[in-house]
Every structure is written in structure tokens, then in C-alpha cells.
Length: 187
Image 1 (cartoon, rainbow, N blue to C red):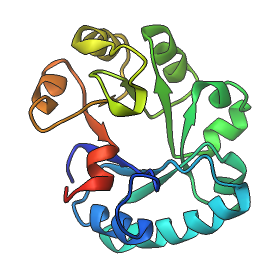
Image 2: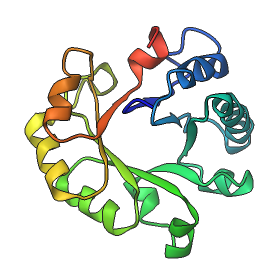
Image 3: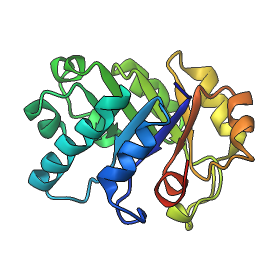
Image 4: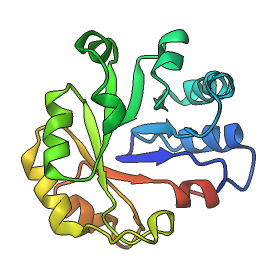
């Protein structure tokens, strides 16, 4: 198993998304996050069922994103949430998930996510990225501070390339999370 997380974005995907997920799963990442949060809930549920099935042959955990009700409905105990959604869940709902991740943008959010029971977090965006071209990158010092502050795995997110990946690991990250390169090329 490698230490990368692949994040989906069907708008960037150059081929069939479920086929791409199966291809990515064959590389045995830590997780594949199905981040199609702009879909209507029913469409997301149908896609989630197909994505979970695509990950299964490689024994890779498909982590659903945002749609807590869908995860519960399909009995899938792995979800990644924005902090705004994580904060709304009851303790019982948070405990139901075996894999609970959150997107964090500060040391304070990382500490809060850990306190709320997250099993991992993403921290970003570390480097400049097309996805957030109008928002300045937070940098390696930010990543280092987040990694030092929490005891759960931190995955660096944003502008990750093969050239800067090692710098993220050196800063203390457990791994990296990539979207654009996972959707656009062979990983």
C-alpha cells in the first residue's frame, strides 16, 4: 500500500470515472476519496456503489465525501468531510465511521478534527494549484505545524507533484493527496 490518497473529480477525468477509480485502486493507495459533492444525492449514491465495487478487487477503501446519509444508507463506514459538516455530526454519528477524515486549513481546524474523532486529515493547500488559483498556498511550514500539532495521520494536499512530494513527507506528512494528476494521467 502506498501513502497516497487519490481524490476524484469527474470534471477533470479524461476517461470513464469508475474505470479510472479501478485503475487507481490497482496502485493500492491508502484511500480513494469519491469527491463528487456537486452531484444530487441520489446520483452520488449510485456512483458511490459503483466506486466502492471498483475499489474492492484491490482491497482499497473508497472514502465517500460529504454525503453522510448516503454512507449510512449503503452501510459504508468511510467518509471525508468539510469541517462545516463534521461539526454538525453527533458523537454517535462520528463514531459510526471507521474511517473519518476532514479537510483542514489551519492548526486549529486540525486539532478540532482530531478532537471530533477523525482518523486522518488532509491539510492544504500546501503548494499553488489550479483548483484554488485565487487563494495563496499555505506552504511547507504550515504543513509542518499541522503535523506537529496532531497525533493522527496528515496528508498534504494541493499542488502535489513527484518533485515536491518528498518535501511534504520531510515536513511530517504521512502521505500526500492528489486530484488533478490522478484524474489526468497514469499514476
